[in-house]
Length: 277
Image (cartoon, rainbow, N blue to C red; front, side, top):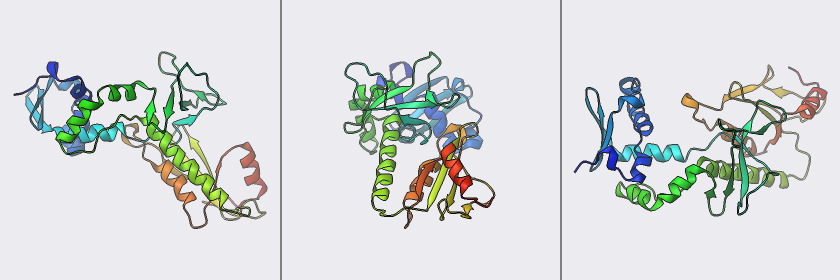
């Protein structure tokens, strides 16, 4: 028996949305389905293993399993390292625990916590032990976790858990900072191998330069003609993961680099080394 959009369960309505369906279709064939817009899907129904989408000239049918995979990939994506930061001094409401993960507003200096279109600060409290978050997205999945888990298991997918991008970012950041501390602790002497990095938020680029000479006079910085650039976001503003990969790669070298965020003081050190550029 086919279930129409109006009587999909609350959990199914979270997964089988027009945006997830269109994303799934475009992943299969952007040339064929790239022209579709959400409003072009007139209704959504489920029939056994398939999703049936009614459009003006007929039906588009795709597998529920494929939409579930797309949904999970979307909900478990890790934002860019530069999208958020841990804000140490923030006001908490009673009962709020965990680390304060907040989006960054790069339009002012110093940077501040970003706000949404209603002026509400984009800051969330993540408990890394329990893997919980105070954001609405996490609360939505947690509310329907039992039914969503059944939906995932029905199609032999991974066990479902409530999660969100803030939990994912916090975990990735903790892993990065832990590795950073471990590498620093294992070095008894000054480390001349430096990786200086910054984020160009206007262009969405990670910029970095490295040296094996530290701030030694006549030391060489690479690349010699400027900064190496890597795109932080891909198509549709989806994070590429390049920022995490680059920083982790610097730390995972046989002789790890020291990560140095670019600042006025770091710029002065780079100039004092009389680097060739």
